[in-house]
Length: 236
Image (cartoon, rainbow, N blue to C red; front, side, top):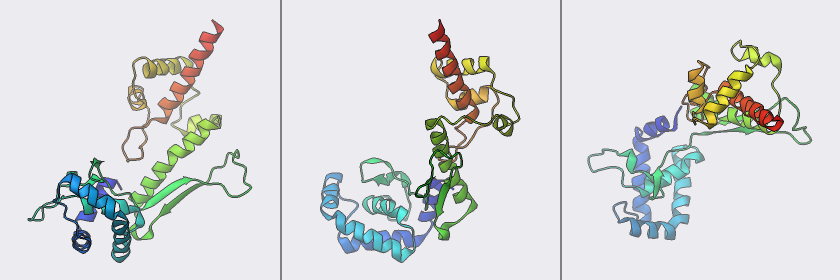
């Protein structure tokens, strides 16, 4: 599930806009005010807006993760008198780029009390609002959690087991000359990991938005190539 998909689903639900309209009438806000007037009003009444947002989300049985998006819809004049919606007009606090609702999930590495953080076994916690549980949402949360694992591995300099090379596509140990070439492509020609991966026909992985923009193999080769070049220059 992508945030853009979640956003479109929200606006297909009439009760969402009814909530926004009812709340504007209750608090006395007009989205057609000029920007300066609107921002001054928002700053003065924000505590009331936040309280109303929380109450509406409870009434609508929506997760608290979408509160900020509800507030941005409340501020923005994004729907005309014929009911046509322009999502590009929903801005973060009326000033920042396009707002998107946070998905009802969270993720991250966790450790229990007195647990050795250097243990190679890692525990990943995924939390999903059961009312929105779908395989797409689970896959999104898991994909987002994966970079945390890579960061931990790199930060603690954990070397992969030799078997891992075969598990990640059946390839033998890293070709040092190819690693040096990958480092050159990255730092001299400024290719992305995705571009390097496609150049060598390596598998790509999804990023936190679900797009195929990551390549763990390219990242590994670039890292080794950088180390090899550094070692070579030191010995000269």
